[in-house]
Length: 140
Image (cartoon, rainbow, N blue to C red; front, side, top):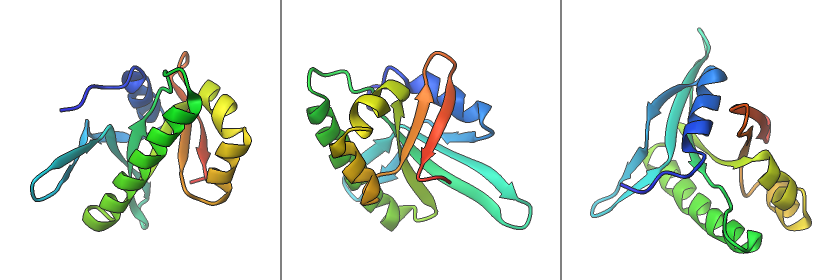
């Protein structure tokens, strides 16, 4: 089982406050010989006639000396997990959870904007002090 990110509890609480039920902590992707773990699995009822929305959330704190190195690692992990979820849990959409400060320093810059504009990544941003989700990018 992988170690939990420093913001794990914060993001979990923020999702619960936003009406999500945490279904997996962590969400396991079972392969033939390996298991991979996305930090959280969650779901919520959209409307009685539309069913349940399901997501998986990978939480990243970007604590290393280089934001770009953290971004490279997060993007690689996001792409890997997204490809596996498409195959093994296609009902789930993957989101990368980052704090508001990481969003400002990384995703408001050119490199982050390119990833968002090209739809290579979906973000959930959060305020760690208030344990609140502040943005879904793209909008849900």
